[in-house]
Amino acid sequence: MAAAEGANRAVTTAPAVRIEGLWKRFGDQIAVAGVDLELPAGQFIGLVGPNGAGKTTTLSMVTGLLRPDMGRVEVAGHDVWQDPAAVKARIGVLPEGLRLFERLSGRELLDYMGRLRGLPGDEVDKRATQLLDVLDLTGSQHKLVVDYSTGMRKKIGLAAALLHNPEVLFLDEPFEGVDPVSAQTIRGVLERYTGSGATVVFSSHVMELVESLCDWVAVLAAGRIRAAGPLAEVRGDAPSLQQAFLELVGAQGRDAGEALDWLGGGR
Ligand SMILES: Nc1ncnc2c1ncn2[C@@H]1O[C@H](COP(=O)(O)OP(=O)(O)OP(=O)(O)O)[C@@H](O)[C@H]1O
Image 1 (spheres, helix red, strand yellow):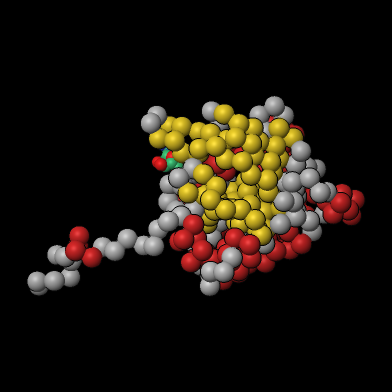
Image 2: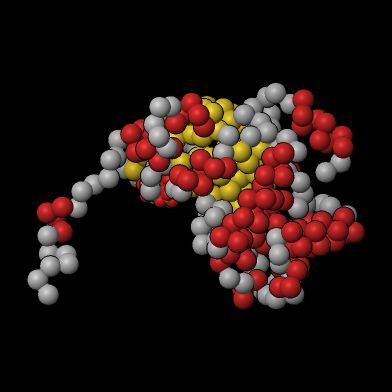
């Protein structure tokens, strides 16, 4: 990152993301039911919630992939729907179920994404070489993406999302299907990135991971924000984020008890 870019980030006090009155309905299903949220810049932010809580729908609207029914979103000071080009230049996205250009090699994919982002060829080359190295993909850089494993796909997707040095990086379940070694690598890259003043927003179900990585968390359930703030504040007096989460979403774990009385018996 250029020194000037870093300095600009350091003095930014405006939130990285400002969400106001966001709604989305699919038929009878209200997926996001009036979300208001300000995500502070320069933080590692976790968006957590049970299955179907509305995390992916919210992230899709925040990154300009899905049009809200109501509400507005600003990212890095720009309105996502009124000024989409400005927002897209400033964000990186690793969406859920990432679609990649399968018939390109990892290296070609990064070259292509870099050109799409308008970076000069030699700069793309330099950044791609470094990202492939740090993410331990140098040995597979000439392999076609279609032949990549799940974890390798996450890593090349992450490299593509970081290539233009975005201000805010959105990651939907970045650690799903990733082995512990690759997870550690991804984690190192993300920590270094937020250390430079950039913002990471990621969704996850894995509370231990969120607890160990995030400075700030937002808990979403049934399309609404249940709690948001610095990790320690959201955890409160609970012994762990997992426990605080279970209390916040009102689910102490369903006891299968008698409902599955046939399971495991009478063989
Ligand atoms: N395209 C769609 N059409 C119809 N319903 C949808 C669509 N996308 C999401 N939903 C519904 O909206 C709700 C929120 O889904 P969403 O994928 O945002 O949740 P999530 O928090 O990301 O869940 P998970 O953790 O399981 O990925 C769910 O009830 C889901 O069935």
